[in-house]
Amino acid sequence: MAGIPLDDIGLAIDHWRERAPSPDGVSACAEVRALAEVYARMSFERRDEIDEQALGEAARRAWLAWLGTMPDTPCIAICSTAQGDALCKGCGRSAAEVQHWPAMSPAAKRAVWRRITAEATAWRFNRYAERAGGPGARAMPTAGGT
Image 1 (tube, helix red, strand yellow):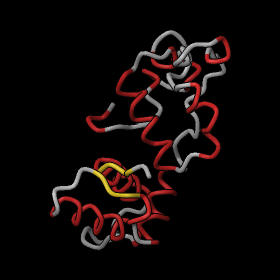
Image 2: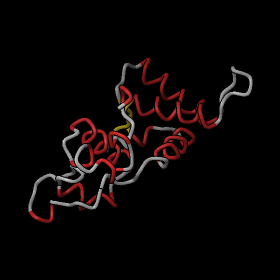
Image 3: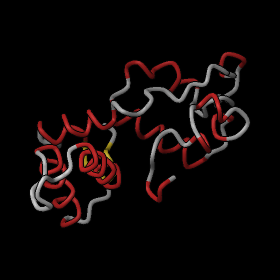
């Protein structure tokens, strides 16, 4: 089972803080509270990631809602795995990742997104960045603001 990195929990918290700001500067919405509990526990235990199934129901719903604001697939409709490439030149996923993408868990998909974003070698990050939908083609946020 894929793990959810600590910085993804932090990004989800930031999303909910922006979406539902504190009315009094002190209280937080239910989603922030649920995710903050996970973040604090992970920080206290010095854990870099948490198993997707270990999230409480409220934190899982909040994390999935944040994840739902991101593009589901890194595909830019230029696939080279059909021509036999081990990694797609367009999106950076392996042939197996492309094939099994619909059945992958949200955390497993996010792990692939994090890897291809860190590598930044696929065309989605340079040559065809405009197809990926944004400046620098960094469609999925990662630690360090990339």
